[in-house]
Length: 305
Image 1 (cartoon, rainbow, N blue to C red):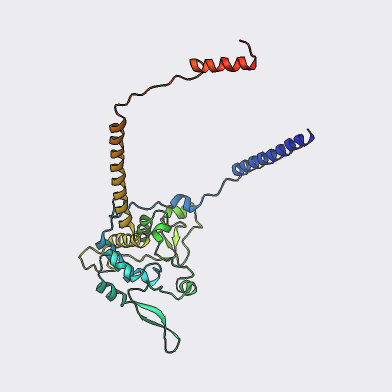
Image 2 (tube, rainbow, N blue to C red; image 1 turned 120 degrees about the vertical axis):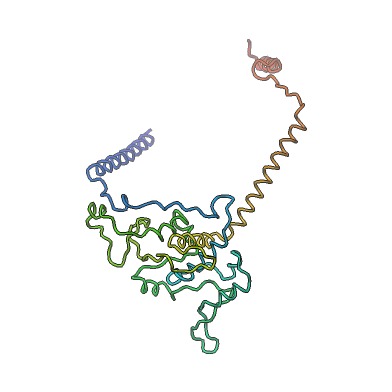
């Protein structure tokens, strides 16, 4: 009894401490509510973006993905790497072997001089991955006011909102609203940062890179900033999910197979059991067979009644 009572006392003590912490937290929240932040009021969700690869039946528009590659190659590669993408992967978006080889040769990749053992560079080969624009993170920060440009290989999967987030960031630069400075006078965008309501902290180190006209599309597509942002977002969806077309095709085939198998199973069931008569067996305490068994067991045990 003593041990049981001690357990109850310990349990009550824990419950009291938890309740005390709860009420203390509530009282602190009421007396000192959290200070509102500029991000809470002025941060925006990504703009809607519709790409050919969206949805369970989507597939890449190779022409758009190729245009996005051009935007990356002529604008984004100066700061951002694509470490997980190899040049030969470009065959998946419509390039042939000769085109891949020619494209790879336009890039300089780090290497070691076999004669001297010193670091050097050479022309890229289809088997090479896209080279990083900087030797390491230290060099990247030194060139970007201590900001580290992220690798873009999986950026669509790494950011909430995916391609819409990338598109919104690239097209979302604007002057800081007067309403923000009026309500939060100390929230002025710091030097070397740029106001963008689609970025988590509202201030991003990357300046606006797409103004329109940065690239010239061979297929005649208008090179507006909005179009360039959509194209590079589509390209980064492909770098993040290069097997999307194959997975969607496999999913459709599996769905058709399962639907066909379900129909065959339904028809087979009715063919085998459609005319069978179902019978319900009476059971329970009022079942005559069970009553006989109960009476026999009672007599054997010497129980009357």
